[in-house]
Structures are given as structure tokens and as C-alpha cells.
Image 1 (cartoon, helix red, strand yellow):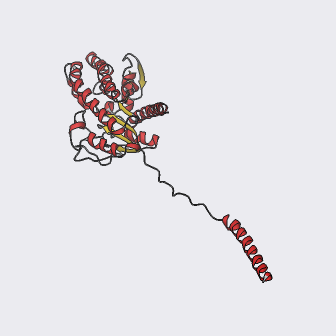
Image 2 (cartoon, rainbow, N blue to C red; image 1 turned 60 degrees about the vertical axis):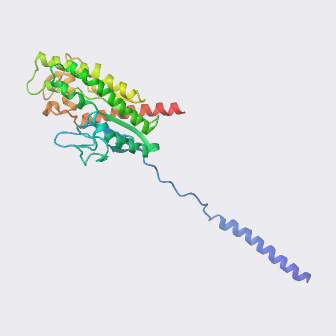
Image 3 (cartoon, helix red, strand yellow; image 1 turned 90 degrees about the vertical axis):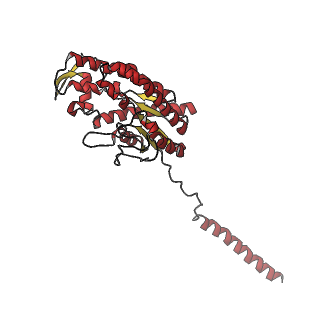
Length: 311
């Protein structure tokens, strides 16, 4: 009996040792369980505005424009609610986009909603995944003033409604996006400078006066109003007028291949926009790329400020 017990105990010890080695050997091949990888969340860039926001060019229609440039250089997914012909009033009150172009880069259709309602609803639904909002609006409000007998007085009369509307627009966007999302508005080129070229060159003293008034209207009236409207909701303004040399005195000139000697301010418009070629008020691809570069730079600055402020 004792011999039998001893044998059983020996066998038990052998199996116990084997079990230890088995665990050691096979355990080396067991891969620890890990959580399934989480799909990366899409981060959005939302664009609003008029024909500039959809990159309109004559003979082409919508192009990637500055919004496409910004999306490509930030890695953000573009959702473009822009509508050619939009005014500061229509973005708030007009349902749908009468000039909707389905090939708009990142274009979003909203047939039963206003532009601001559609954009704000999208932003609110993706609140934690909105990285940037841009707006280009206001040119169609003051466009008629270029043909007025007193352009400056005309702009002054339009300005209160323009500023009120853009302030409302910025307020709604800020409420939908939250306090830290960069909100960037942009101004416009002083395209009346392009009229220096067609149909006759050089222009009369009356035209030179009109060109100077255009620069004054932007620098002293329109752009400050836009700046106040966006800053009221923590937004910022990119001065496209200045970037396209509109404020350079007309006495400063440079040589151009197409038109000979031109004022620097006029040569810049001819290079970056279509007005000198065919009277169209929209930028060329080079002009939209310049706008895009300025917005990307402003976005990176605001993004860095937001992070340091939250840290």
C-alpha cells in the first residue's frame, strides 16, 4: 500500500512538472488580447459665403478655390455651404442656393434651409470634430456702389446692415461650434483697380479718383466693419485687399508683359484676378491660392493660441 501511494505521488509530481513546462512553453505563443483599433474620426473644415467661397472662375464655374487649397494644406475634410451671388442678408433668410453648382469642392446642398441654418446644424451635429470655419461674404452688398455717383456715400448707407448681418452670422456660428474653433472671415481684392486696363489705357483723372476711392472704401469702411463683426464672436479677419496690394499708391509702378508700365496695385489685380482680361470680378487660381495661404497661416496662428490658452 505504501509502495502504491509512493508511485501515485511520483506520477503526480511528474505531471505537475510537465504542467509547469507546458504553461511556460505554450504561454510564449499566446498573444495577449487587445482592444479592437478605433477608426480615426473625421475632422471638418466648414466654408460659407458667396462665389469666392466656391472658387468661381469665368468659363469654368466652381473650382477648388481657396477652400480646396485650405483643405489640402490642413488635412481637413471640406464641407462647403457657399453659394454664388449670396449677400449678408440671403445667407440668413434665403432657403436653398439659387446658383447651386453640384461640382463645388466639398459642396453641400440645402434646398429647404438657409445657408447659415444648414451650416450651423452640421457644425452642431459634429461639434467635437470641427477644426475650422471660414466665411467670405459682403461684396454683393456693396457691388452696386461702384456705379453710384457718390460711391463712398453709397457704401456708408449699406454698411450698417452689412455689419449687423455678419455679426449675426458670426454669433450663430460661434454658438454652434463652441468657444475654441477658429472662425476666419476674409475681405476682397479691390477689383475696380482692374478697370485701369480695359477698354482704354491709360485711364482718365476721373478713373484714378474712383480707384483711390475704392481703396478708401475698403480700408476705412468695409474691412473695419467686417473685422468688428467677426471679432464680436472671437473670430479673425484676413485682409485680402492688402495682400493683393490695393493700398499701394498708384504712383508706384512696375513693368508688365501684357500692358507695359502699370501701377503696382493694378498689376497685382491683373496677375491674380480676371478683371483686366475680361471684366470678371473673380480671382484666378493664383489669386485663390494666395487667399488660401493667408487663411492657412491665420488658422495655424489661431490654433496655436487656442491650445496655449487651454493649456
